[in-house]
Length: 91
Image 1 (tube, helix red, strand yellow):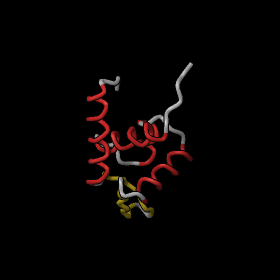
Image 2 (cartoon, one colour):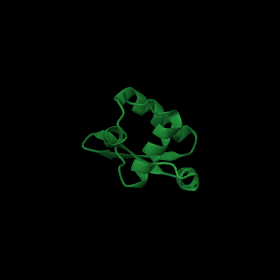
Image 3 (cartoon, helix red, strand yellow):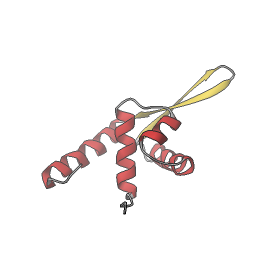
Image 4 (tube, one colour):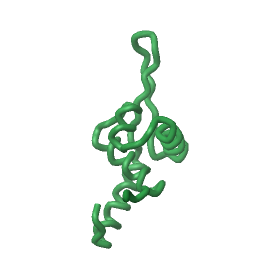
């Protein structure tokens, strides 16, 4: 039986994949193992809380959205990675 991830686990997964260079919404969705609607809600929440920022570019007659991790997002991710190391928890 698979264990359900907490919202914290999901947010940390999204921060991790964006930090590693995945910046398009659909790619974030696949890399974080989410479906589309939860991905949209989580990305919106993370932008509102200052963990990610949105960069929109015009091209081919449509707007392309990319996400970048902010300094605050990096700090949160590093904080929890250090906590896991201190507790010797499996990653």
